[in-house]
Image: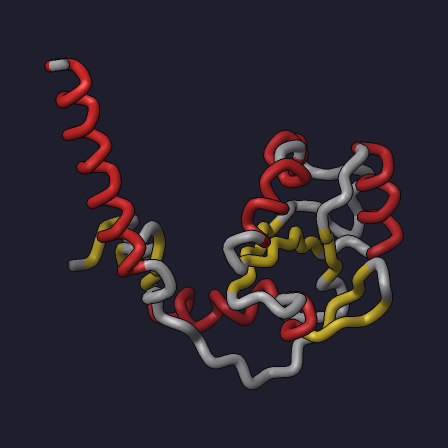
Amino acid sequence: MRLTLDILKRLNGFEFIEEVTGEYIGTDPWVRIDKQYRFETDGGMASLAALFRGRLQLLVYHFMFGPEYTGGCPACSAIADGFNGFAVHLEHHDVAMIAISRAPIAALQAYKRRMGWTFTWVSWLDSDFNTSFTKEQQRSGRVDYNYRSLDITLGLEVH
């Protein structure tokens, strides 16, 4: 009985944690994007808005695969091996997930087939999407990382 009460107390704690974190989900600052980014996908050209596929949020994994690469980054490939398994779970929480690389779509498709992957992978080869979001931060010398502002000129956290 004592063990059961202990477990119940812990479970109640988890429920509380879930309630508290649930209050914060979706409160991250949203950024208005007016630029019309275009991406090459398996189905042709698509806008940034289309990549959301009707979902509220878009999780973008920047997969290192450049135009001149013969294969994907080994670390990125190891991480991507798990995408097929969890992408469906994200979708159940109103989150679309994509991988994005600068390589031509044909190279991405060939590598994706070779690896047996089915997740959405798009090319930003003819776009400045990947660099647009960091230019201003790089100029200012500050970057937001892990919910903290970092001074990249010194590598120090800014409070």
